[in-house]
Length: 252
Image (cartoon, rainbow, N blue to C red; front, side, top):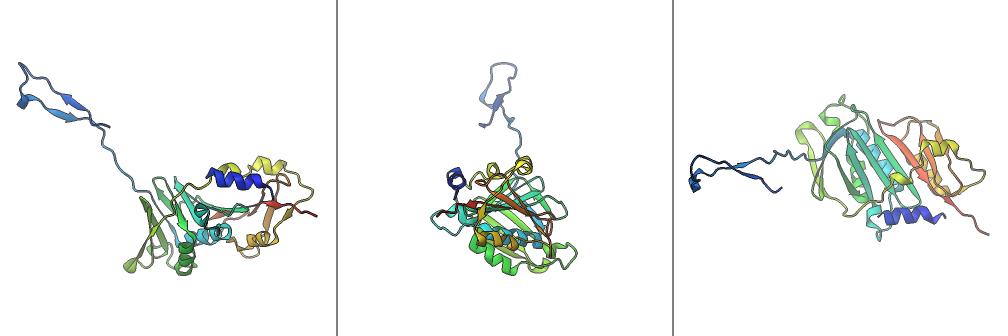
């Protein structure tokens, strides 16, 4: 096993201004006025709203590569990041990584920027109760709203008249700086591998990533000691997936 990838993942680990207004004659206490020139700051609560089927897809795909080792708690969560109407979900167990992205406003709308780690147990529970398909033509019934306040994320879903609001304590910790681990399109286009071995279970797990029926999986390489990139060309329910898989070293 190439240990560099595993090490990278584990390690990556006004004052208010007071203005004195002068008046004619010696200033008296009653003649001194304080004016607060501090710009008014609007506090935005990070939140996003997206189709429930797309959110469910993100949970399903994220659970494929989420860590199971409780001694590394930040890897046992599903990482959500969002800004500018783009929502990304990332998970890794050090041997593979799943990355799902939705960029279409018809599928998601974001407010502010945010990020949190959702416990995998909560993700698994939500998969069971969230809608599997759109049934009300993108109405509120089909939408999920996620709001982050401090270390608590609130997930709201269900019928308009009976919305379920579920507060969840997020996982505390810094998720690995994952973007540097993802090969670029140029690296993938120039990659050349004559022989590489992969964990067969992890390789088969690419079929668990949400995709359309009979959609072919694309397999791309950089080198035989760097992660391969597997993906489905078309997005599923507005979510485009990449699946990184580390090669294994055959001994003997």
